[in-house]
Length: 152
Image 1: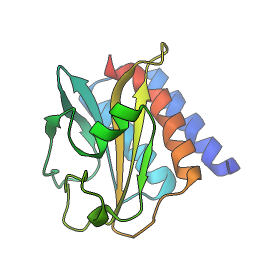
Image 2: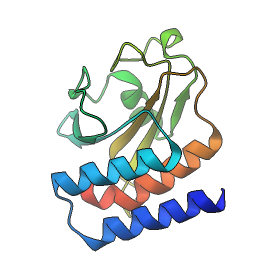
Image 3: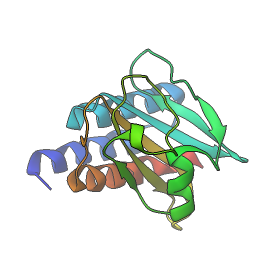
Image 4: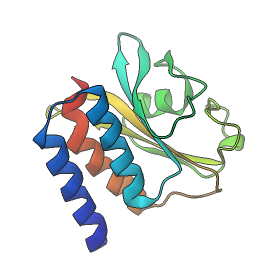
């Protein structure tokens, strides 16, 4: 991972540890993660009962699915497999729940607590095909680990 990316992770971790997990701070954290890699849109979904419920997202445009069953979408597939999912072209994946009509590719990363239990998902979307790499996956897994404590 690039040195600048590691520095961004340190900043995110310091900010996450410095304060509580208020809605305002979660919004700031997702914006920091989005800015670190220039992502178009990013959201954190928490698992509440049998649903994914959006906890914080970037931007001002609300997603089409602020909550949905844990059995649906790419988030549901990531929960089922326990692994990140990278989709280069969402229009070719039947599991995709359209958040924005301009989304072309997406990465979903499970967020785990210290006991490795999945508490939620980090969802990042792009308007470009094949926008996400293994470096994005590594970055998002680490960023998710830094803020997962806010999901319990």
